[in-house]
Length: 536
Image: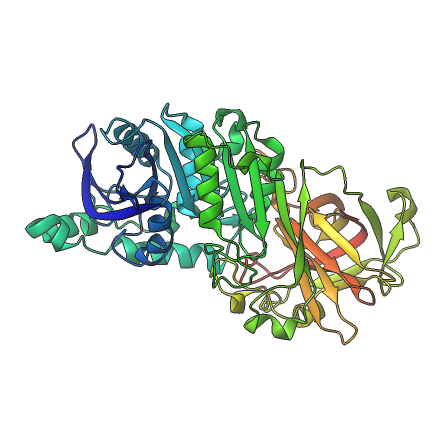
């Protein structure tokens, strides 16, 4: 173990002479008095001001990593914190270029052995993936926590082509506030007023305006979405996701599509580091997991990091919805898979029986065809979705609550009471034949776990702007013809959930889901003519 020296301010000068402010945590001497050797650096590159609220999580993990011979470099991005310059939006090319320069700078310092890793959660997890795709020579491994491979389909802006409600607007407002903060006079001296005014005058454009001007998956969103070419990432990648977080789908897509050495962990967590105190738990020591990962790939240690299962997944077991707000640990168990999609998963089909309003188990989609089935209709209700939760807040109290209110405002199909426990792992999928009375409409589909007392827990959900039924690209968006029947497929969010014996499965369909997404421009009635649920 090493003693630790924290260096509060180091200036990193870029090629265009802009200086970025950084804090370093460095191993100084071993407990036996010897000097450190084989020192490895890893940067975290964020716009949140390293001297502000991120000091709390920084101080929980960087000193521990430094005590094992790593050096942490926490960098204020250009135009944020104490750094010079301006920044104008998320994940700009300049941001990634700057980060590559920081990695190169680190690799060339006299105390560096030339190997650099990169870590980050949320924004830092995003740019770790994006920079890895650029393949800077010194970058040898990354850890990406709660991040996305697809900026349009799985981020804070759009869900299924619908404008995200509380998420996007809240995030844009928060970033407007953070962008307005001044640099620290203790770091930049008397220049702080001049730097502050420069930021306020030149980088205060509302980000929401930009996001709303790109409502389809155009080049704006394709930039920095690594799903455009997964093969660009070659260094080892450790992914961490949480079932109560926004970005869990991406872990499974990347586990399927990345060809680099990869491990993934999906726990019950919300949008915060999965260490002690996280809710919902149980927690893991993610710092120790990162230490092993970087030790293996940056130091060449044989420490078992690559002998771990490729996917470690927490299967949630049910808990009564009224207990979610004060939940510490979500009951469940860890399972392991060696590949994704897993060969251990067998899909089951359920027909949406219109007459009985039941989910009926079938063996093929042909069994569900019944020309005598009636059509069921539902009109949009402005408060359907009020119990949808907010999965970016990082607290158990922000999880979706009892769904029975939203269920009453939806079309529902219930299974018969289960005769044994049923495990659901992966992406449920629903195929529907439907029609709309409006040219623009949306649909929300929820899979719920219903208890004998009628309370309902959300398992998974999927949302689709029906004008995006053929895709999210600008050329794919087409208005509906009122009254015409369309066949659509909706992939619900990935889930790992055990429905216990005696409970029932419920599929709920509604033409609105506010405030999770903004509503359609006019009230809508959807007619459901046929449907099948595919359950993994």
